[in-house]
Amino acid sequence: MKQTRLIMGMPVTLEIVDGSASQSHFDRVFDYFSQVDQKYSPYKEESYIGLINSGRLKPQDYSGEMREILSLCEATRQETNGYFNIFHHGKCDPSGLVKGWAIYKAAQIVKGEGFKNFYVDAGGDIEVSGLNGQKKPWSLGIKNPFDENEVVKIVYLKNGGGLATSGTYIRGQHIYNPHNPSEKIEDVVSLTVVGPNIYEADRFATAAFAMGRRGIEFIEKRPGLEGYLIDLEGRATLTSGFELYCQNYD
Image 1: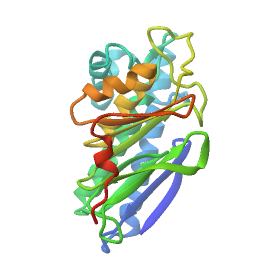
Image 2: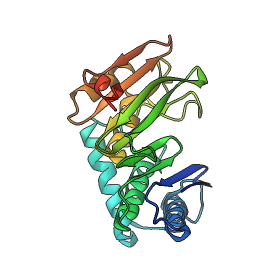
Image 3: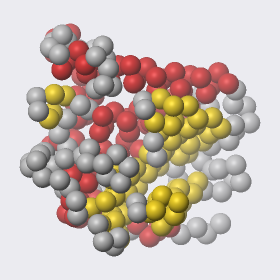
């Protein structure tokens, strides 16, 4: 059973292979994403982020979950030497972390219902568990940023995990280098990260992309992560263990 809905300004897809899935299971996951959007969207004036940026919500009044997200963002800032930073021009925007965090949490909801074989996809960032409908490892394609109809690599997630791609080829220059905000990131077009879960893959994909070409070196040194970078000339740079994810023995 597979369904897609437009939430958070992007297609959100849930597929549950296990036959006992019902509409209520799908509704619960989609409702969760809608709640996240209402609470943490930087584009909604009445979201927590909108209230924070307008000065109407003070730190002492933050919810426990809001504090958790801000704490995770700060930890990520420190782990990336400041290349992940949710504050820009005096405004707070934790979108670079919230998306992957929400996908991960949604996957936990599905697992909590007893399902083992499924995937959750929000705007191309994906968490998988178990096997697909053909009882094989989930296979995820990395698109050619210069031709969206072409897949340049297929990744097989045999033991679950997450895949996230950061880039400018769809949304333009929406990622910036916090150390030099006025400089456009033009030497890298896309950077895909595979990790133990989508939360880890997504937050570090965002930070690594902000580093430009050096981002793939950062991913190389990060335990549990592998990466695939495509530069402006269409050249790919892979971390040392990435090709292991491209081998399918089934």
